[in-house]
Image (tube, rainbow, N blue to C red):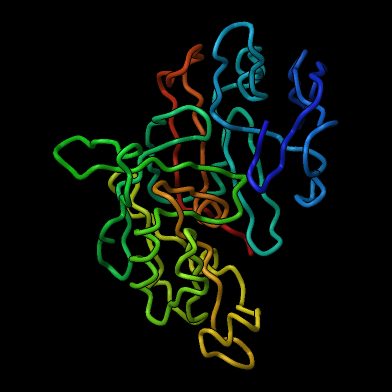
Length: 297
């Protein structure tokens, strides 16, 4: 089994009872990484605890941890809530429910459109009050027609395990061109675009992702991935001494969105498994909900 960053898990299957927070999945099957490439040490953990929307393809295949809890009726509801802390603040995972104290305001709920990572529709983006052109990118295979004659949307992966935000290449370029003073910091022949922008950029210029017909602004604290410190990059963008430029948490690559940690720090997220489903499609009721996260720091 492969993961991002070149990590490959390979080894024998084991079966055991696994308990988290007093909830136990009995006879749960899992890999032991005895032959794979790379290690978990670089990730600050001893293993990967997958929470993808991966229903069993048949009754003989092993289930994911959360699906196992649902099958064994160990959770009150077939949902889990995720809060990702900011600035050293502890995060929180609620299995079988969510924490209403962690969010406020409007809740946006959208259906899951594909298996694997939690795939939803993204309708585009706003920056500086304007719709981003080419927000779909080149997506002949990944665009999804919307209802009511609206433009096509793009599949977005909602992934708690991704440290950044990835947007379609054309969308990322248009977004950063809408942020005053933003510059690309890597070679323009690179298929992955990396950007920096002035650290004092106000919230008004932060991009918003359009989900379920509503704009979801990314908090300035989450869009900031730290000061630019690389001397080569500073020289390239003409900034010496203490850098007034910050690394953008959003890169441009490919033709789909990946809403990773910076976006999910801004929004409390509830993942709805929906009805138990066996097959390659999506079960009834599978959805993802977003609401503005309440941080204590």
